[in-house]
Image: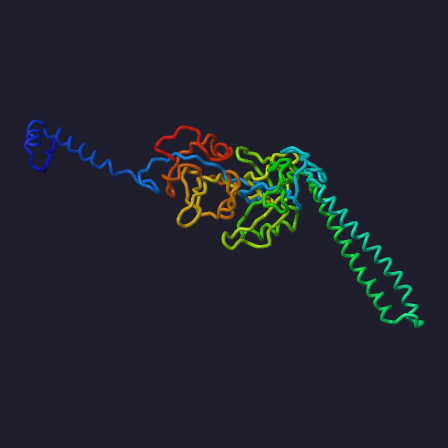
Length: 411
């Protein structure tokens, strides 16, 4: 057997093993040690992250669909008409002809104020009018006699002129009396208060028997018309051109949902755009009209408003969690056929529900990562934990949410 010359660092224990073991066995042991030491450096690092293990993710397909173009806002329900009923004359409230919360019709009697003082005033004005009319008739007859006589020289021209002046003066007096009668008649009519339109009566703030003052600050009752009803809401001023452009094509629909309701409770039509943008907030006020036949909307209540501007057809969309925002803008991770991912910047459009429109950078049919982005790098290997295998749909429920248990700390 060939002699083997070995050089090794001096160590008492190693020197003892060299004396005990035969040289062939000692050489074989050293070869094994050398191979073990080199085995840790023989593996080639994986692309994009060294010896990184596959990252657990969920994925979904980019697909095309029709997406409504909408503006979401918070609005407040307003009565389409509201009137505070106030008295225009002073007097004792004689009777109340309705109950609080009652539905009233236009012209229905609401309150009656004691009319007797105003009836007496009207009679006095009418009597004065009759007296002055009688004097006017007499003066007119006198003038009719004086004018021909003055022409024949039987009376002086001065007397004829005085007769004509008295007739003109009495005519003015009669006109003033007639105006006073009309005013007294109006005051008498004001003793009866009626509903100006169909609506619901609110709280009655005064009872029969109390003194009512003309023009009091507090109305006797407020009537609100709630069928139809309006919803007022504010949108950003920079979106006004979109609204105006859409209005040129057709009437714009508006949906409202109430707190605690997922679905819309009423659908109406945009009816009003304010004539100025608020410079302080940069918003502009809009109003929509709703029939409200079922009385779902009540004045003063907050509502979630969705203004529908139109429909974008066959646009690429992905679940919104797939779109990540970084220093360079929006990006997604594309799933390759070899089980790795690629970083790609995209231009994200509007968001509707749980999906986001991709305006640029992604085509329908490409698969994107929807969950587990924190551990991903460009070219990294992934393990798809979606409920459905690749190529069979949108990955899970169309929103990219993984329902299987994950490992490796996938997020």
